[in-house]
Picture 1 (cartoon, helix red, strand yellow):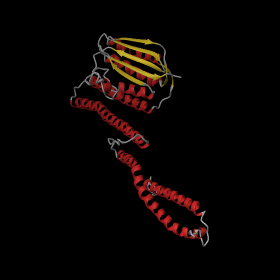
Picture 2 (cartoon, one colour):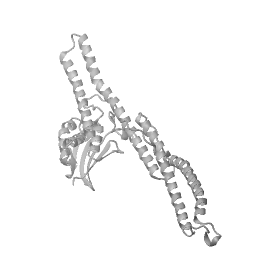
Picture 3 (tube, one colour):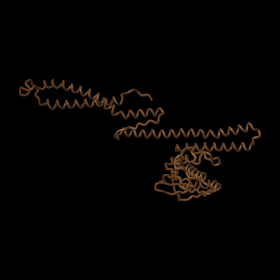
Picture 4 (spheres, one colour):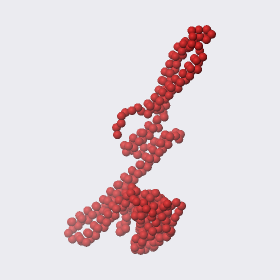
Length: 358
């Protein structure tokens, strides 16, 4: 947006300082003139015939007063210009940082030194904003790159299968259809997961009262056949707890947690889903047995396209690496907290805390 040119803030402050100084000097000279000259008689002989009269004193006082005012004007302009520049220096640094950010550089920080004042507070807030922007932009760039790679993989596999089948007339048709169906299903699951992740990030959903204990029971009932095939004991315990949010998104959140707990487990292991009411929050806890997890790996599990057991799974329940990323996004959209804690004996303890419905 174009705007008409105007005076700079430094010049405005300089003019203000000089004008204020001139006004203060003029008032002081006026007070001196009124206070002193009012007692001097205005006649030819002056006071007792030996002192000068008011007319002579005014003629002597006026040039000196004009000189003093001129000096105050010069001193006010020069001093005001220097003082305004010193006062506005932090704003110049903030403007430079904002200009760099506008051109795409988010790594620059102001790091303003000096005592804590309004400018220091503004600079610190701006640095914090730049840090969050840099983190979010980096996360989005990594997400876009990983999503492009993951979406390209099933398409490349489909192309390879079709090329092989086209060159080999004896290629079994049923096997071709089945393999293409598997690859297509994976691509659809990935696309739906990306859409769900985007939807939860935008918080475009209707909020309603939800009983987390019923959600947990529904998710466990849905995944019970998977748990039985893998010889996993699945238990749901706890008490009715309520939160406010989207029932569909919360069901997807619990389903992802329980499915991860089943898939990333050991034969004969257990998965426990527990709900409880805590102070001001409703808590959902999903705990499973499994192989020990390195503590440094746990914080990365909520990043998109990260899998706790690596990227080499090839069974029918191989995820797309968005399970816990979707969980984290849904919890964040519901103003909740997600905690991941590795169990000493192996496995993972996941705790979700959501604000209690009022």
